[in-house]
Image 1 (tube, one colour):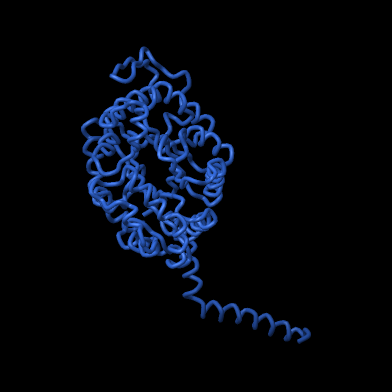
Image 2 (image 1 turned 90 degrees about the vertical axis):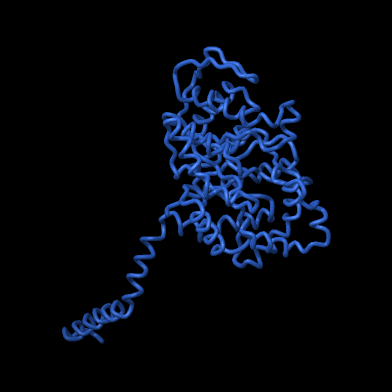
Length: 393
């Protein structure tokens, strides 16, 4: 197993705080991830709900690119049905140049029903429009031949980009997947990567992980494409501290507000109890422990995080990158400490960095008695020779 690591940054900010400061902190967070050696960060697009404040991941990425050196920057995801394909493809090609070839493009149908309502779209048509839009965008990004294409929501006439992407032949493209076959089917059709948005979700997401790759491979075979597991990313919510008890104390800051958003957003289910009834008189620490016990989250220690990574690996049969789903569940200072702990004690277990240092340490420690004796023997020999030659004691 050799994994890469990143962060899935929607970003979440509970309403009531200064949005300017929240967005600035998000940029500082990306700088922190760059310093810690995370491989990538993905930033989403949302237009309603008051929690996810980035309406344009492209603008955010352009700002983050100027503050960072090496971390890859993903638009994850852009709601393709909300964009004219030529204009979106043109923006992405330019952004690939502005980031120095660090751009990644995640495509999705749009998670928020209210976004679609405000734009006058039928939310039931979003997945079809995603596939149509992605077909046009990939053509425009990867081929020189002009494209003529017409659907019920966009028209292209002899369309071509005036600027090719900086990465050859194109930056990485990935499709979001939750619990339906739409994501893996499209990844297979276009030979794209896959973003497992709800990989630990107890209501079908975790079970779906076991079936996901077979769906992608089958669709790829139908279309003469290939898909690679190293371009499959699974997303898991985590917050770490030195002890599980401390991590649970940390998340009492924002867990109730996060639950309110989740019950109101795309992952709520008809028939679920009202969130206010769940929270009424509830012990937030007990709710955090329940989330841990369900396998959905890790509010705990580096060892618990390692176990979750292994659990996802075993369930999936292997993937390429683990993305931490990062929310305002803890105070910013605790969040920054959590990421540092993850980088220091979890990432090296799975990215190949520890094998040689640990082998070298074992070589020394297992031979500690003979090494000490040999070292001391050489010293004693030098001392004896010195004295035999008349040297001072």
